[in-house]
Structures are given as C-alpha cells and as structure tokens.
Length: 357
Image (cartoon, rainbow, N blue to C red; front, top):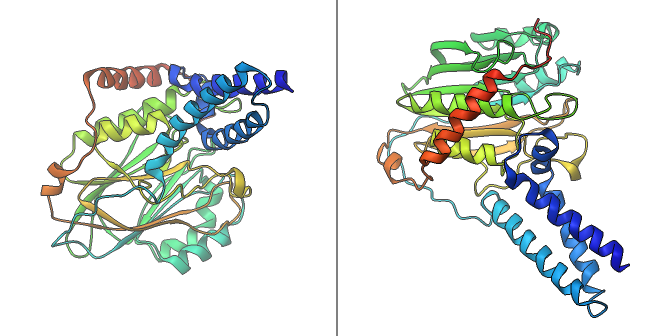
C-alpha cells in the first residue's frame, strides 16, 4: 500500500509540474485540459495518504507536497468560480443588449435542423459557427432569411467558419495569421443605436495526438489575434473555440497581450466540451471582451449533436472610456512580449497536415 501511495503521489506531483516547463508538446499541454480533474484525483490521493500516516515518515512529506500542489491548482481555478468577486463599474450610456451564440458544430454532425431550430428560438444578434463546411452551409440556408448579413468560409478540414448577424457590418474580412487553412474572422459592427465594436471569431487547432503534435499553431494564432487587437481603437469582443482551457497559460498570456477580460472570471467554468460527458467537461470555448463592454448573461445552451455545447453571451457596449484606464488587468512585460512574438513566429513556421479544401 505504501509503494502504491508513493507512485500515485509522484505521478500527481510530476504531472502537475510538467506544464510549468512551457513545453509545447501535446502531451504536456494536454495536462492543462484536465487540470481540474487532476485536482480531484489529488484530493482523493491525499485522503488515501491520511489513512497511511504513521506507517512511514515519508507519507507525511508526500501529503504535504500534494497539499502544496493542490493549493497551486486552487489559485489557478479561483478566478473562474462564483466565489471570485468581480468589479462591476456603473455605466451611464450603453447600447441595447446584444446577444451572441458561438458554436463548434462538429463537422460530421448532421443535425442541421437542431441548430436552425435553436437559432430561431434564441434569435441571437450574432451567430458564429466553427467546423462548418459546405454541407453545413446548405443545412443552415434557412437562417439566411433571418440574418441579412453573413460571411462564409466553408472548409472541409474542420476549420470552416460561418458568421451571421442582424447588426450593420461596417467592414469584415478573413485573416489567415499562421496558416492558409486556419481562418479567423475580423468584423467592425454597428448596433441599431449607433454603437460600434470589433468582433473576432477564432478557431486555432488543438495540440493532440490526432491533430497537431504541438501547440505552436494554436499559440501563434491566439497571439496574432491579440497583437492585432492592440492595434485597434474601440470596443472588442473575441469569441470562438480556443482549443485551450480558461486557466491555461496561453489564455492568460492572450488576456495580458490583448488587454481583454475573460468573461468566465467570477461566473464559473461554463464548460462546453465534451457535450456528452458532463463530469469530464472542460471550458474550451471562450469569449473575451474589452473593459468597456458589460456582460449580462453567459451560459451554455442545449446539446444538439456536436461534441461542443453552444455558448451564449448577452452584453452591451458602453461609452464609458474611463473604465479602460481604471481596470485592473495585468500588463504584459517585456519577457512575455518577446515570448508572444516567438509564439507567432513558430506558429507560422509550423506545418500542419490538414487538407485545405
């Protein structure tokens, strides 16, 4: 029993520390995805160790180290729980509420009717779909009667995107920051009451044994979007399947680099993947926004056949520019800025094995 406990303890400590290495291999970066589940596993290991106290002096040491590791995990998770207090500044002038649905449809899912029915029910002002190919474009044809403005990038490599909106589109374009088969959408939108904001839709590839061997393209794409955002003046909202969990290092660096707010802060995990397995769900789909945007609602919608749940957000754009200076966002330092530029460079140099169609 002692040997088994020592093996478990060593495994938990090693796996917890590996992501601190910044190694971009999928095996290391994938640990971030399951960090909360690792936290639960360590809790059970600590309980196991408590029953072995007194049998060896090394048991207490292992328990102590496990408690230290789990304390680090708690610090990582705390901002993304409802226990975390978020500052809610008062805004005198703001737009009428704007709603958005972000949904990774899963390209091989054929439940087109499920999505169109959901959209007719929720009627969001903005709809962003990912992994949508020509078949999905045809399956969503009926909603084009509802959304007068749309931007389509149908691809069969699981990185297609479709964008629909009721709002006025001032300008819109497709960016290919790191690869010619990984698109992202950049749009300047205007509400009916005259408020303008930039919208970014993103879907970088995940590090995994079946996708990319490293996170270089994902990290490079996200850092490229952050760099582009810093060049803009005005309100910004970024939405999409980041293929990175909320508490992941790249997400936190993205927040610093872009000076945006993670919508999950103070609101809970709001996990979106995997849709079928509730107890193994993780927050892969993200929405970030500039400090002059107020979020009213942030939640998942019902499962309609994909491996992701649709993500819903309702927000308003404000005219309160003082909050841009008064927010307490962490500033990116020179070392992190250099790391960001390195990620962008390595992301562009990485060659994926996707078929571009």
